Image (tube, rainbow, N blue to C red):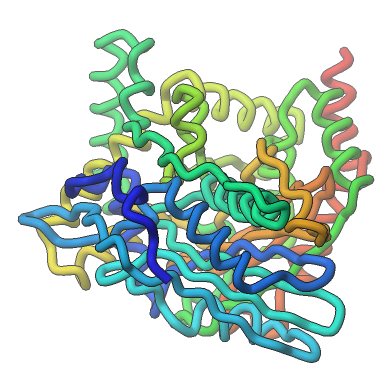
Amino acid sequence: MGLDVSAQSALRQPQSLTNLNLPFYYLSLVKENGNSCDLIEIDGRLDHKLLERAICSALSRHPLLSCRIRKQGLGYVWQPLPSDSAIDLRIDWADDLSEDKFLTGNVWEEPLAIESGRMIRFHLTETPKKSYFQIVSTHACADARSCFRLAHDISSHYSILTKGGVPPSEPIETKHPRIHLWKHLPWKRKVTLTFQALLQVVNDLFSSSHALHVQNREEGHTAIEIEDLGADGLRGVKEKAARLGVTAHSLFLLALGRTCSRFNGTEGPITLIDMFSLRTFANEEVSDIYDCMVVPYKICFDTREQNGALLKQIASHLSELKTGDILKELYRQHIYALSAISLPKRFATRLVCRLIAKTNVISTNPGNLRYDLANFGASPVTDYWSFSQLFPPGKVMVMFSTFRDRLRLVAVYDKKTFPDGVAKDLLQPLAAYLNSSENFADALQEAHV
């Protein structure tokens, strides 16, 4: 199925990949593929023809999804595809669904042809009672918020079509998110952050840090496990965070660090990689764009300290990032991207992995998703969650999913490193730590002094 030519209107000429896209493009080449997935559970069946039309009209609104990545000179550009480029929708039937069907079969067994075709594909798997719709994307042009926006667009367009209506087709204007980041910063602050980024790059070349004491084995099959804390779990975290005067994300990071120390059997320095969204620095139009607008950053703390002190450190670090320090990480990523462009792909991917990740535990929290995902026509959406590929040297990535005010811990991990899974040693202890008020007793007492 081809897109209408209107899909090309917002991006007629090649545009350079930004320094946000480039590192994730290189990371996507590390394994056989770097696909991410948004999985939507639907009660009932969908009309296949209407779903194709809904996908077609939704894609027409997002310019990057009508492009491929192409080498041009020393850099890479988004190259608009011909207007009749096919949409890849695959429809299957299954009596029941195993992990391999969802993950290995549909997501990670086949890479996306991001250099020759559309950077997205779709799977609809029907079972006797449910339908499972998967959006398989790449981090080179998408983050969690943009993927959820596309899921919303497809579901809403499908609902409009079932009523005989015409869904919106005008492309969402493409803007450059970084122009909004430094308008409020003094010139001297920008220079200082640039200098600090250079020092950090030098430090990255000679330092190493990890959160989990595990063997650095060759990467194996990627697996996934989920721990559901439900609505009560999320409510409890929010209540504790409010009493402590911090964000829920600060508690997530502290609990993950404590869980890593428990796994190691010893307290000490912990380094995590977290994702910071740049959308909060941009205007309302930018927040609707399908693009990658996250910056990986590392956060370090010592679990030998009390929770009250650690929460202050974490909250302070997050606050500094929001007031401009994230530019240091953005500049650092800029340096990596420029360095990698001049290298062959094989060496570029190794460079990016070595310098960006720097630890074996990754955290991500998309936060509140601002779009509704209620139904596909008359068929209600009963569940939704997303997951990304795990990039070396990462051995486990924990995603804090809060869809419909329900907390779930989604762990993507390396099966060769954790042959028995991560539920018993990581996810269940992490859930227990978040659920217990006793773990935050010292911090709560200090907060009320």
